[in-house]
Length: 165
Figure: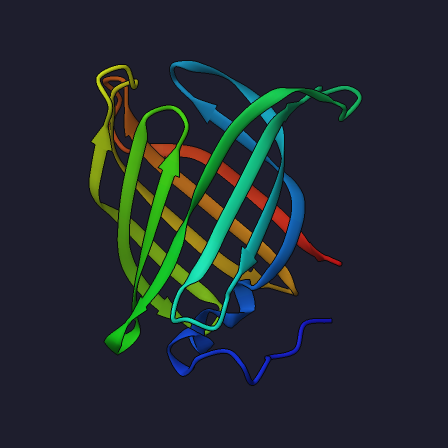
């Protein structure tokens, strides 16, 4: 069970529920891709400074067996709490996309939208996104809407993860 560590800096305390290792599964869909199930592992850590480190990796699952089919998304970044219940999430993707999200944090709930998206010349068209994270019955539940490849902002990913370790 997770317990709030007194070594967590005060600015991080509203985000402390994210700290740990999480595993689970979700669904993905978008008009330009085939819907699928995916597995995900997330690790959220801190080193005593006023940010959290975020590492996530995902893979496509076989719909019949639940076995891993192929790697999917990988993202690395940092959660940076701001005054007045606001928060930033900075994410880098190996596909040539950098995202800066900005939003609000409440007890066990975070709502974000992209404040900026930077793409390398070889990256796919990707324009905006929203993300919502929540702690529901000790599970990390999250959802993402995306605007990309000529499509308007709409549902793309959702998952439920369980704390492990």
